[in-house]
Length: 393
Image (cartoon, rainbow, N blue to C red; front, side, top):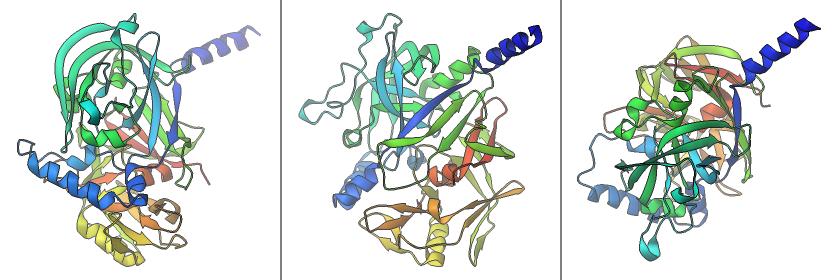
């Protein structure tokens, strides 16, 4: 009996620093605009804004910080008592920011319908006041920094991290007005963070609030439903409930993005062994690849480009061949369920689009189609990515 009690006590201790956070799946901004017949107009405006921003760094990898295709969101709280915000949990960036109570912009204020942080209502808030600006190519989020408790979720069991530095946005880019999200929770390395601000999950690691310096992402399969359960983030451990045995770890090329090497891609008769630097990005619902790769994949499966959606269109009932990606010594196979995404009730698209990185940073983005097929393990402590097959049907 004594052994059993000791064992259970040790088990409780070992699990005390593992937390899970559930996501909600909603339609991306792209899908909503396509259905409204506004995607082309939106992209034309966005392209003009980018062209007008002459001071914007020419080599900035715009697509990594572009949330037009983000579909999975989660709730966090900031402050004591917690003030809730719906955010994109983004492995392609490293800063947390939410709109501040002072966020303004007149009648066109992008903050107007968003939740806003009120520092005077938090007993754990500490002033920082240092200004911050995060560029997005078509605009920015800017304001000042503050410090407070951040909870990764909204219930009492959620990972709770005191003394997190975060951005309090007093103005945000106009394109955020169309999006339901309140802000962004960046999960990449501190070296990628604007002003070298420590990301909240890195703060959790440094405060020994998680068992292991890693987190696992498991996402639900694509479908027509929205506002439904979207997946689970497991903080501090590998998710063994939703994910199968580990297939392999792959060392990161740099501890900025979760950047690693992709050796080859193939589908049907098409094979390309050029090799690329790729990033695992939870903030994108697509795979983004060099134009020649996307065009060849589309040609192989018989997809035709559609200007109104910016995607290659395929038959919703098509059973296309699996896309094969070789990373390290393992080959990862993406099936048609993850390679075809519903746009409208009768129209489906290839879950790939061209990526233009300006010659810097990643050359591919492995977004949600890859993460739905394979759980991604973001191992910050050992600077590596792990992959395990999702246990979904």
